Structures are given as C-alpha cells and as structure tokens.
Length: 214
Image (cartoon, rainbow, N blue to C red; front, side, top):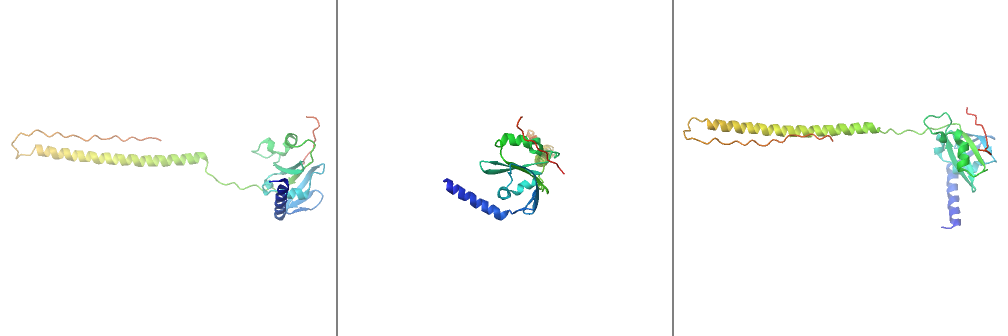
C-alpha cells in the first residue's frame, strides 16, 4: 500500500466524519460539536483548529471534564481528563496532571489546547452480579445437588435394609414351622453389604497555566 493510497483513505475517512459531526464556533472561546457545548480555556501557539478537532472528535470524549489536543507531525491527538476533585480516578487522569502528560508524551514546544466540557455525559453502567454473589449462587446449587444425591443414596440404602429384614423374618418363620420333624440345618442368612453414603463437598522550562473550574 503506497503513500498516495493511504492519504486517499485518510481523506475518505475524514469526509465521513465531517458528515457525522458538525462544529460551530459561537464566539471566540465557545464552540459546539453536534450542539454539545465546549469552552476553549487554553490555546498555546494557536493549536486549536475547529475543523481538525471535529475530524478527530469521538462521542466517548463527552464523559471527560476536559479535552486536551496536541500536535505532532501535523497530526492532532485528543485525550480526555477528569476534574481534580473527581473521586475514584487516578491523579494521572485529572486535569491537574496535564503538565506531566505534555512533557512525557508530547513533542517539546508543540502547539496544544484545552477545552472544557460544559455538559459532561456519564456513561451508563451495566449491572453485573458481583463475584461473591456468583460464587454464593454456585455454592447453593452445588449443595442442593449434593443434598439430592445424598437423599437418593439414603433412600436406596433404606430400601435394601427393609428387604433384608423381610428376608430374615421369612427364614425365621420357616425354621419354627411345627409340622417339620426332620432336623434341618439353619439356613445362613447373608446380609447384603450396605454402602455407606459419602457426601463430597465440593522541571525548568515548564509552561504554567491555571484552569478555573466553575
């Protein structure tokens, strides 16, 4: 695949995205993407370009409080950050760590900008049973199945015991019959071996800026 073909595919993708997302600048510092409002709070070296931002935009960025865009090799990269007082997020994911991100991942002295999301959309959480609940349910099923198997073995053992008692009683009556005068050798009654049920349990040069959070 040659370079010209790659550029052609990239342009086709950009055209499709322009048809999906529409950007509008309402004033010098406020824009909208598909009527979703953003505020341009920092623009270093005129890094913000509305058309390029719309080309790279994705609805997943709407869950972040801030969007940082930086330029490298004529390509715009976007990354989302949460506000500093956001709970249950790492510091590297908050806007207070944006300087660390710029120095570590961005080209030195590159143009960049910061947008504030004025209408954060939190993603819907899907309800999944917790691990301990699933484990408890499996344990109950195992105990229930084990109990059924144990009761089945117990019933079979009880049935065999009744049969042995009946056989023994019948043999005793034959031995005591009065009309028999011949000496008879008592019949040996062999009791079946009952199986017992078992239950198995299974530094310098830094750029500084301040973002005022409303």
